[in-house]
Amino acid sequence: MPYFVTEIQITRSILTRVLDIIFDTNAVGAVIYQPEHLPTFFDHSLSVDAVYDGVASLVKNAVDQIASHQPVIRVLEIGLRFGGLASRVAGKLKEYGDRCQYVATDLASTFLRDADEVLNSRQLQKVHTARFDIEQSPESQ
Image (cartoon, helix red, strand yellow):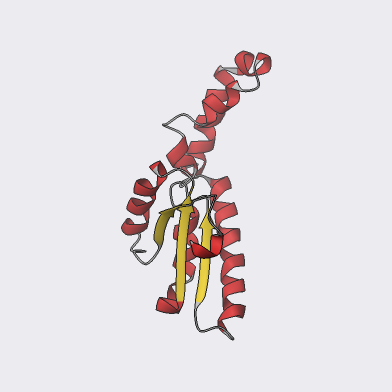
């Protein structure tokens, strides 16, 4: 049951504001993206964990294939948020050491500090975080 805590809290918040949401569909965003829900939702919820684990496995499989014929593997993540996906993907790629360059970016620099804390706490200091500049090519970042 503790694994569903975030989803239950968000559902309760939505249910308490159901009339507001019915008459204003934008109101659901105000509930879901409350500061007390957002960090835990993207790092400690069953639904997001399932997606992150699936994506991490897909990236790992792709890197395994690329590694057989490339000396350096570069992974660019756009949309870092709190670092939940980056920590899972980078964790699966540790075996490649310096051969794998992982850059995790976000359009909003406000997420970078929080993501760095998450990545450092999971001993994934090799993940480079940076603000993604939409006007630059992804290759240059």
